[in-house]
Amino acid sequence: MELPNFVDNLKHLRYLNISNTQIKHLPDSLCNLYNLQTLILSLKITKLPTNMSKLVNLRHLDNSKAHMEEMPPQMGKLKNLIKLPVFVVGKHDDGSSIKELGKLQHLSEKLSLLNLENIQCINKDTTEVILKNKQDLSELKLEWKYGHGAKDSENERILLEQLCPCTNLNSLTITNYEGTSFPKWLGDSAFSKMASIELRNWDNCFSLPPLGQLPNLKNLKIKCFGKISSVGREFYGNTINPFRALECLSFENMPEWQEWVIFEGEVFSCLREIYIYDCPKLSGGLPVQLPSLTKLDIRGSLPNLFLSFSKLEYIGRRELNASLPNSPALHGKSVDIVGGVYSIFPFLSEFASVTHLNFFECPDLVSFPSGGLCAPNLSQIVIYECKNFKSLPERMHTLLPSLVCLELYGCRELESFPEGGLPSSLESLAIHGCEKLIYRRMELGLQGLHSLRSFTISNHCNELESFPEEALLPPNLTDFNILQLPNLKSLNGKGFQPLTSLKNLRIMRCSNLNCLLEDVLPASLCELEIFDCPLLKERYGNEKGEGRVKISHIPTISIL
Figure 1: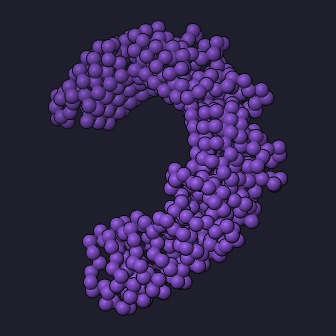
Figure 2: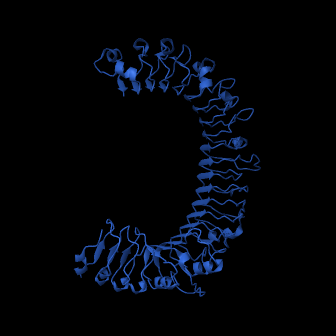
Figure 3: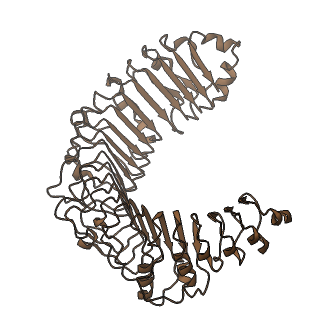
């Protein structure tokens, strides 16, 4: 809880680490340890001794875990200091602490300047050097307190102008800035090593800085710009190939953003990922020529353009604009639709190479467009918890010749398969919690699916006391999963007898099932797995019991 007294006598001490202690206070006598080179603080430390400037040999002051309230005076005398992760401006600061920071020209690696709103007196001389002389600094974070209410936005801009870093900087984060414009240095092409920028909570700015001029910028995150309505030409800057190295671009929480002005010329040539979250008014299109794009993740917002991609994640709560003239064909593999969007269907004629189509919790999904879904390469459809979904695509037996997997989860209103049935190419079918569909199971034409290898049924409470019925399933089935059927009391021998190719049988959480009808289990069965079925476990769980002996011909048996 306290620094031991004997430490005061360790005149040759060079290294002191209290990071894993509960020490809250450091005595003034610590400042007499003139040879101290490294001091690592604990989480509880809020202030440092007043005479810290005496530690002239101090090189590493690690306060990254400490909850500092302010810095001690005359920090500029610590000329040898090379590591100071956090610099905190105390309340009612007259600007002197920032001047002291300017004297620490050997600081390297990471530096965070916190509570910048506490600087009361702003020097109008923007040529004053505070950070520009720190050539070894690689990562810089500048932060005002959220909602601090700047009295003079111009003073805020002047302060940020004074905090211009060295052009060797790699990473920059600026948070809670309340100026109405940005400093001249932000976006200057001289910052040739800048690879990452995050600008967060700039609620008074009406435009973005010319970040496209940064030649090696790879990651850019723009968050909480409450007044921006357009991302225009100023964003790209004065260059013929803006954002030429950018790989990841993120826009988040921009409630007034309506338009994204597209650059005429080559732009975003290396961009691989775009994230757009909570930009509800955005209606202009995304950039079209994105040769490297592999991921587009949109949540709570809606640009009305889709483009070439390798994996598209569409996540939103608004309907997709069905009008998309001259849209490029999609050359991707996966489309995930989450949260109530189904008018993406007009675009599916563009999805010539799409192989996965997944819907998750889309309450507005009722049916597919009239005439069916022409997607010759589509291999998988998953529909998960779409409570109002009533019908699968028409003519899917001919229009979806590559479909091999169909999974239906919680589709309570789905009653039947389309006329003509499912594609003959289907190899795997899973039906979970689709009560109306299972009620009409004998009308589904499952026995005619000669490529079907795997069938899963689960979570049906009101039906299925005996299962499967005779002539329900095709004889070519190899994997059969019976899951969470609490009313199931028996297996139907006549339904199992034709399954002469069955290799794997899995039964889980069927609490009333007490017998496997050992005599009719297919001789081809290689693996039997039983989980959380108490009556079956009682009958077959004992390896030497009578029930277990009757199924001993099965090579692999697991009963848990």
